[in-house]
Every structure is written in C-alpha cells, then in structure tokens.
Image 1: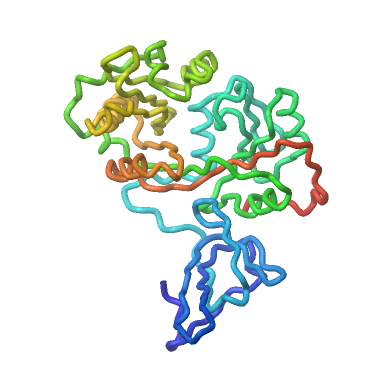
Image 2: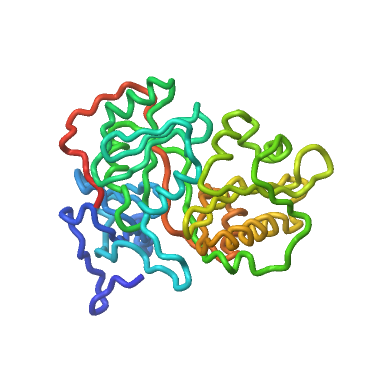
Length: 343
C-alpha cells in the first residue's frame, strides 16, 4: 500500500470525505524511542469527530481510530476491481435474486424496503432488505415485525459500490445490534460442473423428511423449513446417503434466470474429508446448467473458514458482505431527517 510522495507520508483525506472509501495508516508506539508500528485500514469513512475516525471495513466491522495516530491517508476507488471471469452484477440484483430464492411466507413493501417474515426461522427470511434508494422507515418496519412477535431486523450490505456503510453507522449510533456477518460469493457456473458425474449424489425436486434431517437449521422448525426451502423459481435438492437415517451430505439449488443460488450445503461431521461438498455442489451445478443458468452465487458466514476455503478452491470470489442490525426494543429516532440514503 503506497502512501508516500517524495519519500514522505502524506494525508490526503479529511472530514469532508465522510461517505467515501479510504485507505488510512495509523501509527502506535510506546513513547520510548522505538520505531512505531503501522496499521492499515481500508473501508468507508463513516464519521470523523471529536478526535475519532470511524471506518466500516469491507466485512462490515467498524474500526475506530484516534485522529492523533493518523500518519497517512487517501481516498481510493469505491470498490475493488472485479476479477476477470466472474459474473458482473450489482448488489441490488443479487439481493433480489437471493430473496426470491429463499422466499418468506409473508412479504411486504414499506417505502424502499422489503419486509419478510417466516416465524423466526432464519435471519434471511425474517429481515428487511433494501429495494430502493431511500432510508428505512424504522417505526413502520418495527411495527410490522412487532405485529408478528419478531424483532425488527435489517439486512445491511457493505464492501461494494452502493452499499450501506453510512446507514450501518447510523443504526449503530441508535443502538441497533450487529449480528450474523456473512459474505456473498459469486462464480462462473460451468467450471463447477466440470467434473466426473458422482453417483453418490441423488437429486430430487423436494426436501423429504430424510433430507431435512441432514440440514441442521431445518431441525429447529421442520414445517417452516419445508415451506421456505421448497419455494422458489426452480428448486432442486441433493443428498448423499449416510450410514443411518440422516444423509451424509445435503445441498439445495435455486435457478432464477442466469443465476444458480446454492444454499443449505452441509456435510455430517463424520463424513467430512470425502469430497462430498464438492460432489453435491458439482451435481447441482450440472442440473442448473441444464436449466440455462450460467452464474452462481451463495452466502456463507464470514467466520466459517473451512467453507470459505472450499468455495475459493472451487472458483468463488467475494462480491459483497452483509450483516443484520437488530432492534429488540421500541426505539424512537431523534432526527429522522438525518438518515442517509444509499450512495
């Protein structure tokens, strides 16, 4: 990371750059004459006040830096360059495709946000996501969820052009709790299917009781899980037989236009290390190709290092991140006019 001009560190960022993506270098030392240690932070500048600089990184985590420690900084392009060979898509497009592929039984539109409810089963089906440019109407969204006995939950995106870093910072200031950080990955579909067919994988049109046994999330509410998972534009379920009632591995794929969305990919602990995850994904990709899809997407929690490493080996790359901001109380905003719109 280069900050020098003529051999000198320079600061080319200021408080008026709030809302822009920046790269900052800060220094820490022990005050005893030892060389300082440098830390580099890249993300969207969300505030600069009272001696503190706040930056939301690509993964949605907020970093607070002491202004006095800043030794270099500059504004950088709004989003990293897209890797060649990956499908091009905006955050809004992928959010809509993902929502159609994980459809909640109850949906509605409040301003520029789509609300979803599924009895509390999964955050994805019980959260509001951005469908337009306006800020969320938190009072109406909160009331909609309260009527269903659910906390207000907003899906907040970060790490790409037009994402919600400023909104995230505003929600944080108002006490909305951050939870379930995840990353959206994309890949070309054909390479995923470019492998020998695997007879261990059986694909069917619906999640039967045995398939649900292999999906740990479904065990919490099998009836709602079946209702959500079986819906979608074109849905297929893959399973590998285990040595008992539960499958050794399961997976789900939804085709929506050019997109194949993969989800619920899970391998039982005692069957890991046998290549089952790649086999399930490969057979589902083959079926999706036959339906006319050409691009793949999936979502995985950021701290699931083994899954992320697997998907990277298979050709997936980061598109953007998201997490939820949750409010369990009847919080009232003090100044609605100050809420940011999407950039």
